Length: 235
Image 1 (cartoon, rainbow, N blue to C red):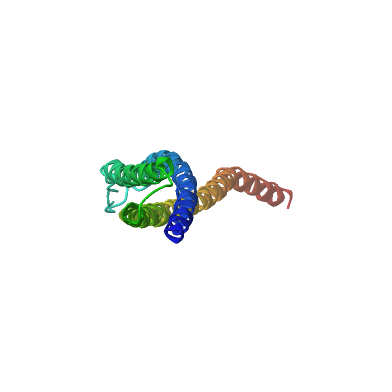
Image 2 (tube, rainbow, N blue to C red):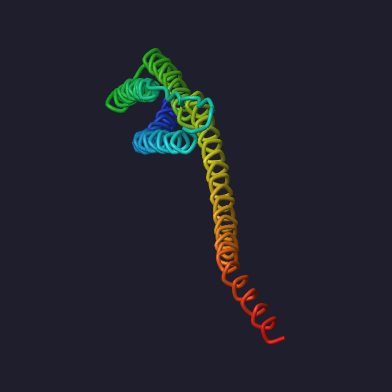
């Protein structure tokens, strides 16, 4: 009889320690869920900014290349990502609620054991040990639930969204590269235009110089003829 009570007491203490540990785990999980919600909000803001940046970059490329015969591929941004995030958050909340329910049942069993009289029969002690065994199973279920929550929080909750974001970033990089290429092309055209203008100015100056020489020729010829006539008279 005494041996049964000692076993029961040790088992009760062990489960009380596990309850305390699980309470700490619940508190930590709640913090993780809060951080996850904050991260979700920040990611949604980042995706909104990325969408705006993509739209702006594509607009700039279209503006720069509107005189050229080039096809532009529009960027498709999925609008159902918030639904994915909400579903994952609801899943975490459901798991957390299940953990709370299991712990409540475990505590009720242990508290009932502590309030019971120590003068128990062997059958009653065996019954309480059976209850504590059931509580142990609940505790194991709670730990498994904790591991499931940690698994959900630890893995990438948005695999498709990560792929989409990678694709957007690649498209954005491609648009930027194309924009830089068009800008370089425009700069090259401007330099060529400036060289052409300089050549045209030089040609105009040469033309004007030749015109002046042509316009001066009759006067010089007239002077030359006059000088020749004077020399002939003197002779």
